[in-house]
Length: 349
Image 1 (tube, rainbow, N blue to C red):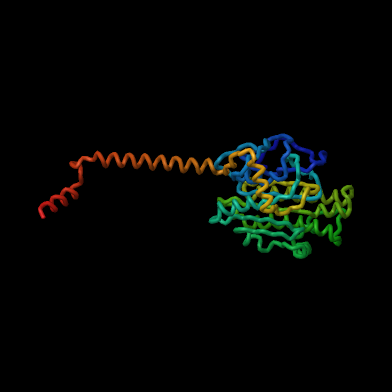
Image 2 (cartoon, one colour; image 1 turned 90 degrees about the vertical axis):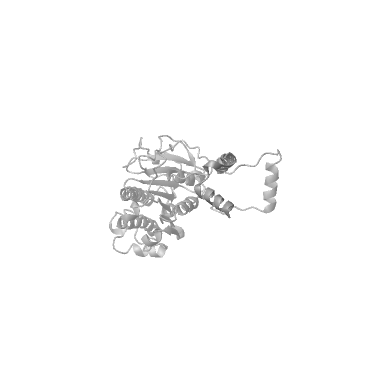
C-alpha cells in the first residue's frame, strides 16, 4: 500500500459516523489523531487532496500540506448509509464525522471539468439506490455498459462474472429484494474496477479522475432485519471486504497515485435540498450585517487580482517614463541612415 498509516483503528468500538482513508499516495499525508471533521467540509477535503484550492480554509489538522507539483491521479469517495463504521481488514486512518449533512462533489467535479476540459478526465458520480448517474469526459465511453438502474443491476447479478458466484452470501438470500439491492451495489463496485482494469490507459494521462459513489443497501438491510441481526453483520462484512478490494484495485490501476475515502453515516441530519430565500429576506439580512457600517467581505481572489493589476500598472508607468525620457533626450546624430537620407532628399527637392 502506497500510503503509510500510523495505526490501526478499530472502527466498531466507536459508535460515531466516520471518515476512513483506505488508500493514499505517500505525498498525501493524513496525520494520526481523532480530529473530527464536519460533513459539510468533506467536499473541501476532497478538493484539497486533489490539489485544488477552496474558498475557505479547511482548518482541519488531519491533512498535512503536500507538495505543490504532485497531485493524485484519481480520487474516489464512497458514502455508505446505514452504519456508523465498518471494520476493514487492513490498516486505515479514521476520523469522527460531525454534523453528517448530505453533500455532493458537484463543486469538485466542476473544477475538474473546467481545468482539464481538453484532457477529458473521468468523472463518475453514481447512486444506484436513487438511480442517479452523472458522467463527464472519458467516463461516457468507459462506463457506457455499466448497469445504472436497479433493474439493470439486478439483471447483471444473473450474468457471468456476478458477485453471487464469487463470494459467500452466508445469511443473505438470493430471492429477497432488500438483499438483492445490497448485493447489486457490491456488483457495481466490482464492475467499475473491472472496467478500469480493461482501460488502464486512462490512468496514464495527466488529468485527475473523480469517482463519487453512494450506497444505501446496508441501510435497507438494517431496516429489514435490524442492526443486531446476522444478515446485517454479514452484509457489513461483505461490503467492507468489497470496499477494501476496490481501493486496492484502484491504487494498483493508478500506480499508487489514488486516494480512496469512505464516509459511513448512520443517518443524515437533514435532507439534501436546494437553499433559497426571498428578496425581502436578503435585504433584511444585508441590513442586519451592515448596521455597524462594516466593509463588505472581499472575494477569495481579491488579493491575486489586486497584485496583478497593481504591478501591471506600475510596470506600464515605468515603461512610459523611460520611453518618454529617451525620446526627449535623443541625439539627432544617432538617427538612422534611412532618416538622414530621406531628410536630405527632401531638402534637395
